[in-house]
Structure formats: structure tokens, C-alpha cells
Amino acid sequence: MIAMLLAGGQGSRLGVLTANVAKPAVAFGGKYRIIDFPLSNCINSGVDTVGVLTQYQPLRLNTHIGIGIPWDLDRNIGGVSVLPPYEKSTSSEWYTGTANAIYQNLRYMEAYNPDYVLILGGDHIYKMDYEAMLDFHKANNAAVTLATIPVPIEEASRFGVVITDEQKRIMEFEEKPEHPRSNLASMGIYIFSWPILREALLKLKDQPSCDFGKHIIPYCHNKGERIFAYEFNGYWKDVGTLGSYWESNMELIDLVPVFNLYEEYWKIYTKADRIPPQYIAEGAIVDKAIIGEGTEIYGEVHNSVIGSGVLIEPGAVIRDSIIMSQSTIGKDTVVDKSIIAENVTIGQGCKLGVGEEVPNKIKPDVYAFGLVTIGEDSVVPDYVEIGKNTAISGVTEISDYPDGKLLGGETLIKAGDR
Image 1 (cartoon, helix red, strand yellow):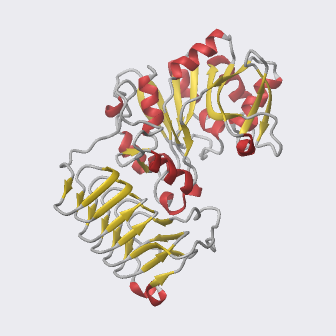
Image 2: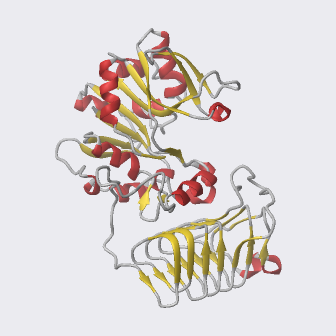
Image 3: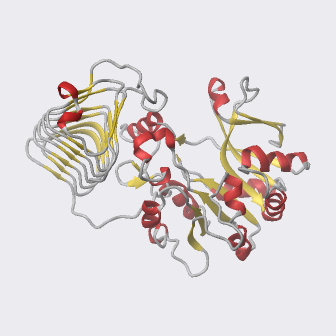
């Protein structure tokens, strides 16, 4: 079995966090990136040939994956291959849908002529043994197997849901139904028997924005192929919104985390830079936190996830927040319930996350959950107050803040490089 990992998504619901970086390359849990989880699942499951399909802002992702050393995927045969869209002799086209992206890499798959192809998304946090799913696929003599997860029925309308018989054979699909008749949601993870996948991709190659959930699976179903639902009952989080991204990071610091990053038998691998250890100064306070290597703490950190190389100056207080690598929090600054991306500088004497919660004026569905979100490479000047449900991106100056404040629900995005 070979794996095809779809990692080209923009992740627009993560707002300024994905302005310059693909969603699978967003930092997670202090030292990881989101794509580390499906890649680690592959190697832990014995899948050693992985094609990573990139498209949107691929640079950080390409650098992170490299030749696959951290995941033991640097191999002469198989290993990891980054597969961007490329120009063909007759046309050059972007990947337009999940299945179209796989179709454009038909040659790559044909080179391995596998028995089975595993299709994965690059933007979920979970641990899953794909080998157990493959055993289920073989035992049922299935053409296609979908990984499914039970969700609360009131949330089922957000997903593609499946209706199965007693043998777990899928009888019906409903893509985001208004009144769901089942709570088994598709996780966007599929195992195809290779001849079935190849035939379906070739048949539907001219379908605009060809997608697995909307086109390929229904096509196979209408042909009468055997399609089964493999039920997964572990931790699985779609970190597609700022709220779920913040929540799943916060769950990592529980005393007994629901999702354990430290299990010996199912390690999560990542590209590790050689950096010095953490330094916690005399008089600093750290309470219930994940702290990355190379971070220096002179202030206070409570219930937060801090990346590597972060500087928290004296008198600064961080609560319920995510601060990604190489960022600096100035002297006497107070940060409450914020997501601060990589390489951000926050001045001294600032207050983040103050006041009442009001909806964001421009993107109320993105900048919500009472969070302050600051995009990478941003600068916030000294002594400013920032309200909730706000977003900041770019090098900002005191003149950008009327009366030294960015009120709740406001968005401040400045173009240009640092």
C-alpha cells in the first residue's frame, strides 16, 4: 500500500495564521507541525511510500519534509516525494479538487503499481493504525474503505455521513445533510484497491473540480462496488477553525491529556532543529505548560503552549495562549487567550485579550471564540490594548491604534514585509 497525502490546502478559516503558509505546515503543540501526525501514522503503520501533494504556499512544507529523515522516509525505493502541480506539454493546471490532484499524479502511482492506495488529508490531529484499516479492507474484499468516526448527531450536518448495514457495508452517502440520518462521519481517509481507483480517476478525469466525497465515491457506489466503513474510535480533531486549533492545543497540557504526544509505542516524529535547552529564570513562574527548546522565560506562563526560541521578558504574563517559535513578548505585557504565530514581536506594557466579546466586523465566522490572533512576522508596538475576536498582521505602529487601542472585533492587516 502506498499513501497519497493531500497537503495543498490553504485553510482559510485559520485566517492570518495561513496567510503565508499552508495549513498542514502550521505549528502545533509547541514543536510539531500539523502534517507530522499523518506522516508519523504512515511510518508507524508500516507505510513507507508517501506522496505529499502540495499547492498553496508550499515552501515551509517542502523545507520541513526535506528528504523525510525524521520519519525514516529517506529511502532509495519509496520514501517520501513532494508532488507539486507541474506544467504539462499541452496545458498547465492547478489541482482543482482532491481527486483531480490524485489523478494528476497517476504516473507516480503507476510507477509503484501498488495493490492498495491510501488517501489522506494533511490537516487532522490523530493517531491511527492504517494497517488495521487495510486488514479490514481485505477481510471484506472491499473496493473502497472509508474511515469513519461517530460524531454527536447535532454536529453530523457538518460532515459527509454514511449509512451502513450490519456488516458495515455502506448503503448510502449524504454530503453535509440538513437532517442527518446517521452519526457516522467520513474522516476523509480512504483505502482503494488500485484498479478501482485508477478506473474511476480515468473515467471522471474531465469532471470539473473532481472530488472524492462528491464524485469518486458516488461513482463507485453507483457501479455497485463493495464500499465499507471502518469505524475509528480514537482522538481525531479537525483543526480547521481557530477555535478547534486553540482547543486541541490546550488539551495537550491537561494533567492526563486526551491526546498523548509521549507514548513510546506510537511516536510523533518531526524535524528537530539543534537548539539549546529551555531557560527559566529565577523568579519566573511556569504552571501547566508545554515549553519548546531554546525558549527563555523571565515572566509568567500559565496554561499555555510555547514554541521554541520564544523570549518572554520580565513582568510579562501569558495565560491560555499559544505562542509559536521565535516570537518575543515584551516586558510587563499581559497576553490572555491569544494565538501568536511565528517570529512575532509584541512590545512592552501591552494588554492582549481585554474587554467584552463582540463579533469581528469583517470575518465573524473566522475571528471568533474570544481569541486574539496575530499572524507571523507581525510587530505590535509598546503600550497598546487589543480586544477579543481581533486579528493583526504586519508591522504595525502606534499610529495604527486610535487612543492606543484595537477594539474588540476589529481587524488590522498591513501589507509589506518586515
